[in-house]
Amino acid sequence: MSVSGSELLVAITGASGSVYGLRLIERAAPLVRRISVVVSRAGARVIAHEMGTPFDLEQPSLRAFLGRDPDNVRFHHPDDLFAPCASGSSAPDAMVVVPCTMGTAARIAAGIAEDLIGRAADVVLKEHRQLILVPRETPLNLIHLRNLTTLAEAGALILPACPGFYHHPRSIEELVDFVVGRILDHLGLPNPQARWGEE
Ligand SMILES: Cc1cc2nc3c(=O)[nH]c(=O)nc-3n(C[C@H](O)[C@H](O)[C@H](O)COP(=O)(O)O)c2cc1C
Image (cartoon, rainbow, N blue to C red; front, side):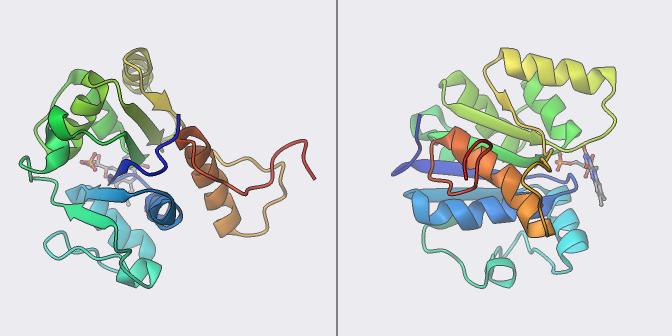
């Protein structure tokens, strides 16, 4: 399946690794018609902590992180249950939660749709669209494992933020791009990343 020419929803929650979500938006923006972006309250705080630049949920912008705001990126406040992606009639073709906290994974697994991220994920699953979760936690307790299993059984793809090392990464950017490249692969979007077994 490919979301090329379609609508992608990227949710950034408050797990370590907000750079993965920001980099996915940067790489996917030229490849899809539109990207809707939702950052959780905790996500905004972790972005500020890890990237060293505040992310204002009331006046969202990617300029400080990507150097510009891509024309086809639309932001939605995490409390905005009136956003299009909150309805099955306007569901995105695919949704990626990256990074995904264990709290967000638990809420989605339990069907708790109180904020836009939980509701949009609920909608994506009920409409049989693509849901990719990129959890970042270690170690995992039994509750985490059970929730991730429930989500996989419901049709979500669990794609942990676990970069490989067989491509001999020389920078953090290459490690980040390894994970983002795997997400692009599953979205059916072009990913020029070198692959195992290729020159
Ligand atoms: C700096 C920082 C790093 C965190 N990293 C993780 C993490 O890697 N995984 C995780 O599940 N929670 C992590 N948390 C905890 C979540 O942010 C917290 O559970 C929050 O309530 C999740 O809310 P959200 O799911 O709405 O974003 C972290 C918190 C902070 C402050």
